[in-house]
Image (spheres, rainbow, N blue to C red):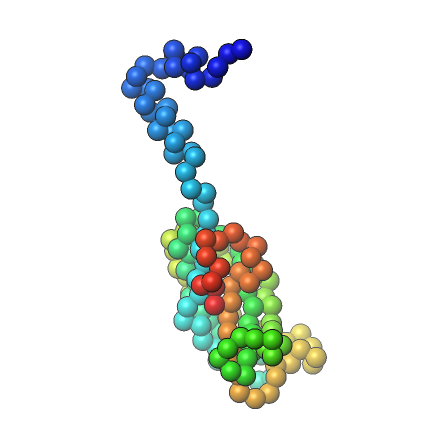
Length: 146
């Protein structure tokens, strides 16, 4: 039976062996992961059918992200709980949502209800934006996505 390291060590000089071990150790290191954070979320009210909103997304991780889902939750108070039933999920869009590792981007979007049964609730609401709510993107920290 042949052992890998004894055979390869005959082929490598001491300097090359050190470089081989350094490369091997580097490849065993931490796994690349994103860490998405949302900030500066603002919403400009429109009518019962639509509104504009903007936010800044930052990826403090070490891996780029092609797209991410987002949801907007309408709450009667500042605490998210089971009473917050009006939620608008927004699907990811790889064409416009790429965010590189260590980068930030400001996004401006418009939401328009598709039908009368999806009109916005009347009244005064707190609106909370949350990115990657479905955890499709593997992150180091999901607690900073609101």
